[in-house]
Length: 136
Image (cartoon, rainbow, N blue to C red; front, top):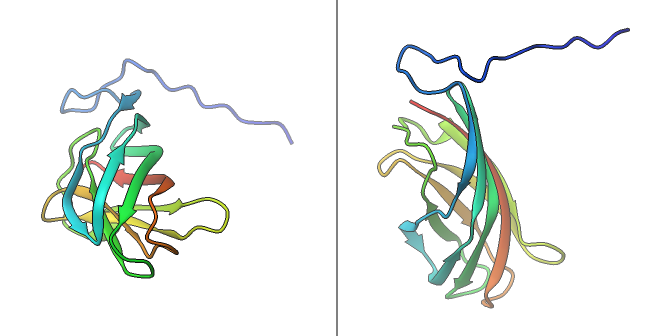
């Protein structure tokens, strides 16, 4: 079986004029939604857009107030969206060996991604994440 290739033009634009293909880096703003967070740190993240879908990956630092307690933190988006439901943004995060893992979903009121994890300890931890969302 031979591989099939698809060629996509990087200069094509949908009706709104935004590029179909784009990528870059950004440092997200953290907050908006915050629960059980004493402090947080943002790092440069990377993103790529294909049509009306954006994928993001990166790392954040979270210092929770309490261990084993639901911890939520908002993460700004590199390309704006107007979520109407949480599932229009979805992803996962991991704190590495022995640390907690969690979920990322859309926060429709603020149009941000929301990190949701129950940390193993109350110590500051770095979480690596990926999430994908629709531009609406």
